[in-house]
Image 1 (cartoon, one colour):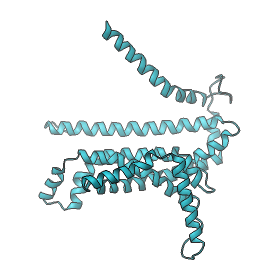
Image 2 (tube, helix red, strand yellow):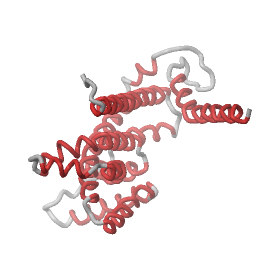
Image 3 (cartoon, rainbow, N blue to C red):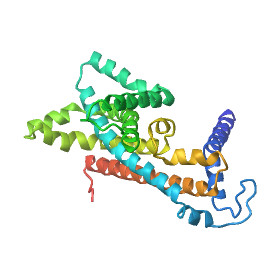
Length: 282
């Protein structure tokens, strides 16, 4: 009897948890198809807000900037973070512990501190560049925005890739060297395939965080406007249903990417398990 009540409580808890997490998103998706601008009563189904979205030049321009910065920063941060993880993994125990703790600081640091400190760094650079003709005196805008996004994304890559490197059996790498591979070939044929799921996961996290970021972008964007900043400017008046439509599209796209990556990873895992059992992989 106790077991039955316990299972019932677990199910109720899970249902409440998922309602708390996803009911607001479902509410937003439903009202992105609402005929009227209100969000208290659903008056009818329409696609006009999606049509209006693709004719709103300011939102599309801000979205383009966010996507460009997110893709560029995610790619660069993933490369730098993966290289840093490999370097940290090759360190001694004490050195690795010190570097790991230092790397963890930007993750727990409030974003407003990171944003202001990066802004002060860029302002100091501009003052220094004003006294020399060798450096551009104005970089506030896309360059500073990209650098700022790379800076806060790299630690997340390190904390995704490093645990996978710890699980890696070093004997596989040594066996590849014994069988005739040079270190470069052994890396690309043994280590990289093993840590690729963590690298992909880190890339998706960087991509999502970069698109979502407001605080750091706000202090370092100059005159460039990203999507979160554009939405913030619009909320000073009233949130348009066009934002509901845009948020719905972004949610569906990101969810699809996550589902596809998880399906590919699961398929690869099952293929490896069948190969280990000697079954026909094809």
